[in-house]
Length: 248
Image 1 (tube, rainbow, N blue to C red):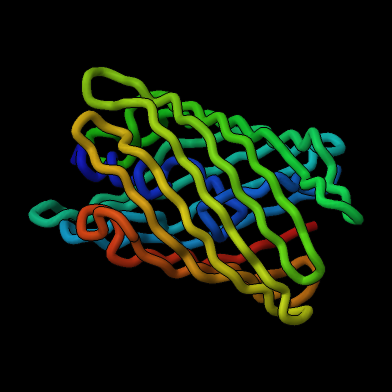
Image 2: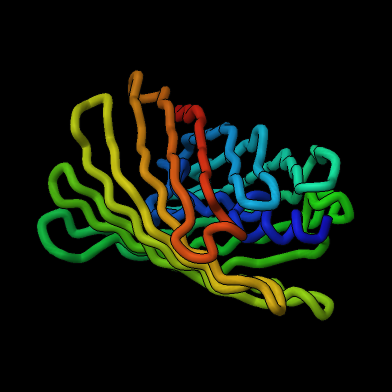
């Protein structure tokens, strides 16, 4: 089940959702001071040898200080590879802190910018393909700019993933473009790329299309659907994320 653990990492399941959920790419905007944002979702990816994902994951964010967000992500990953039984259980756990150190100039061109270091703790059962089996650290920088109804954000960072003789450090980068069509609907897409995280492994690139449906200021449906653009058969024939976001 080593391959399942590698794919969970490659596809972002049991690694950060890094994301401004529901997207894989994250944004620099922290949760408002003394407020919560909680995301829960089902997500999965199909490839030629099976499927992996999370049912569900729980992403909890809190505005710890002005411009500072504390983050915890808890995963319940599954893996079903050809010739193997279905595996399901608790996965690796993630904690992180987002710090926005540049505010956006709403009248000019200056974007908001943040760092968002995160650490993945090996709480999953690696031998079952439900975790990496070692601690990993992600060191990204994210930027965002809005123009009327349009918002674009992205960036990337470096994963400290070196372990034993098989795992290697790697890069992740992505960019997202969104448009607000009404008070209820915001839609858009992203493109992303990740270098190989294992010796002899494959890089992956892909895209997602999706967005948000807002019932009100506190309650939102969030979703994306996408596929790979590079090494598609081995990494991502089809992927989905469908969840609920609560802010208060």
